[in-house]
Length: 209
Image (cartoon, rainbow, N blue to C red; front, side, top):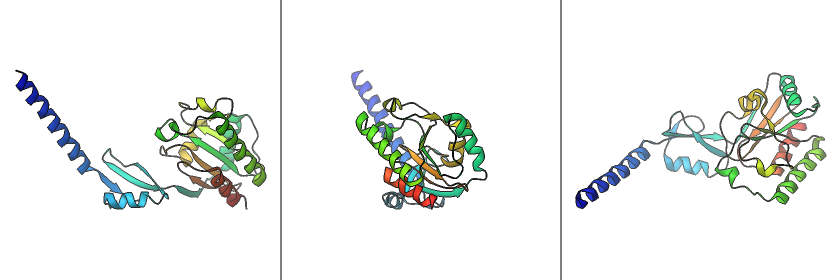
């Protein structure tokens, strides 16, 4: 009986390994233009840090997307109005809007620093730099506030009003945090995934010129 059980368990393990290998073989990789490429090509492009990996149309697909996106929104005044209601503060129509976006808890933002002094200093430096460039404060928006406890008393996060920020700029769950800077004319530059405060400053300077 013991031998039969051992054979049965061995059979399950073999089937499990085989299934895993089959699933791996089924994986398809696509570049930023939706063209299927090999896994080595996919990984090589991903290593440049100019792209992020996002899920494809099915669980067996992975595709690349540019980390930076540029465009223009049809009516900035609608966005302003919703944000003003949410943050309880008027937004200057002649200044850029700088939004830091939190999509919800993930492996990337879960492993980021929880040192409150470091978090406070980083955000103070971010705000001071933006004030020097354009006299604006960043607006912190979240989709899902799970994992934001470490920012309590330091960063005043606000719920994405009617999902307008997600729908306009962040249609996928990009890891860590992302940001977008919107000009007074409605032109914008967004950046997906982990970023430095210097990158936010440079983008704001570019939009504000």
